[in-house]
Amino acid sequence: AAVVPALRGLADSLAPQQPVVATSPQVPSGTVAAFADAEEPQRAGAAAPSGGALAAAGAGAVTVEFTSQSTSPVTLTEEDRLALTLDDLAYRSLLLGFGFLTVGIVSGAVWANEAWGNYWSWDPKETWALICWLVYAGYLHTRLQLGWDTRDSAKIGAFGFFIVWVCYIGVNLMGIGLHSYGFFLK
Image (cartoon, rainbow, N blue to C red; front, side, top):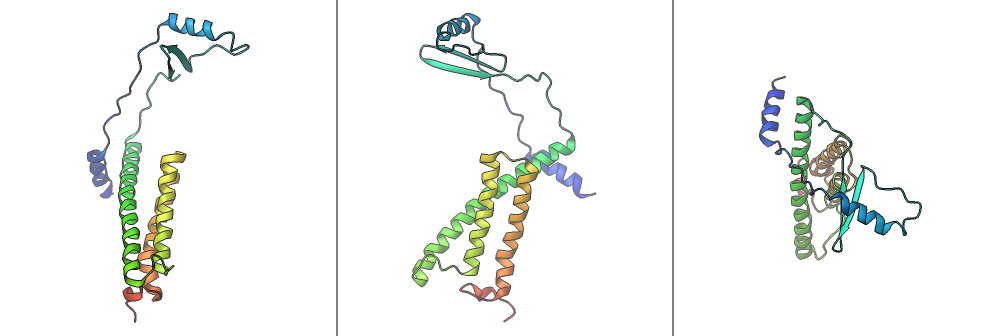
């Protein structure tokens, strides 16, 4: 229970600023009517534009404006704001860590080429580092490209955290491969 106020304080300090919605200027109705009249022979049987999307052309440019049918803003509860802020913090941390992991794998491969004569040897530590990299690449892909819900992508992030533990502790307990110097039970 004492953790929640500390997390709320952290979330409030890291919360992103309220977004500013950019809007385009309103298209004069005469322009829309002229555009609709000019396109009418090409659009035989096509429906007229509704409130969902409005298109207008002028001087060789096309502007498309989408409007929302909702008139009231959505109010988030304090718990929802905290969850979104912590999710944003996790996303930014994973993005930073993914960059460092990428640099570590690439620089390790360059060093391995100098030390052993090949960039990659499929050692258990190297393999699990690659698996970790792929899991976090999947996390970032779901966040950036697929637009998954924060809870679904957080599950992949938590699975990636488990994979990191396997990579850095579990592989060392096996005591095999080029990276067995970390094995502490020998």
